[in-house]
Structures are given as structure tokens and as C-alpha cells.
Amino acid sequence: MSITEVIGLVGAAGGILGGGGFFVARATVRAARVTAAAQEAIARMTTEPQADAQKFAVLQATVTRVDEENGQLRGRQARFDSLLGGFSRTVNRLIYRMERAGIPPEPEDIDELVREYMRTGA
Image 1 (cartoon, rainbow, N blue to C red):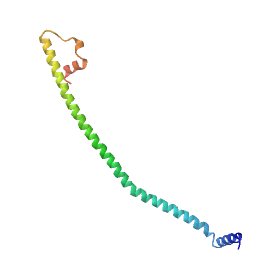
Image 2 (cartoon, rainbow, N blue to C red):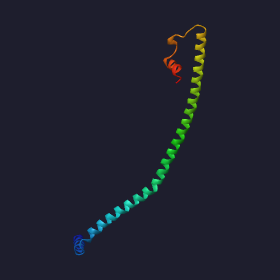
Image 3 (cartoon, rainbow, N blue to C red):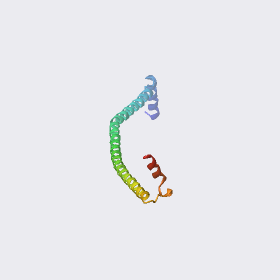
Image 4 (cartoon, helix red, strand yellow):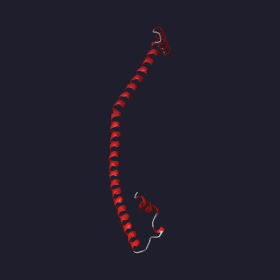
């Protein structure tokens, strides 16, 4: 039997069976697509918890770092406030001594922010 005869015989069989080869091929393609989609969904389901755990670990590390930085900043702010209070008391004592000695400070000797603080206390 020649190749042409075999092709003709397959075509005839397909015609008798209602073109089943075409439908089988379509079903096979659909099955492959469904299988691929299922495998992809399974892969997502197994990797998403790991990704969430990694995101949570990064978030936790960030929160820890920010807490440490905030603690350091609060410490620096407290030291700065103490230093500012010390300077303020020193300047007040010096101004008082100058005034007692009859030496009033010149207006340009005192910064505007210091004058405002001396007026308002804030």
C-alpha cells in the first residue's frame, strides 16, 4: 500500500467515524490547557504562603529597624532639649548679670528666636 492509499484510508475512516480525529485533537488541546491551568494554580497556592511569609519577615524587620531608630531619635531629642534648657538658663543668668552691672544687651546681641522664647516661654 502506498502512502497516498494510507492517507486516503485514514481520511475515509475519519469520515465514517464523523471526523473523530479532529474532535479528539481539540479535546486533547483542551485537556492540556486545563492541566496547565491546574498546575499553575497549584504552583501559586504553594508559593503564595512562602511569598507572604517573606513579605511579613521584611515588614517585621522594617518595623524593628524603625523602632530602634525612633528610640535613638527620642534619646537625641531628650539630650537636645536638656542642652537647650542649659543654654537658656545660662543666657538668662548672663543677661541678668549684665543688667545688674548696668550693661544692657544690645538688641542685635539677642537672636529673635531667643527674644520670642524669653517673651513667651515657648
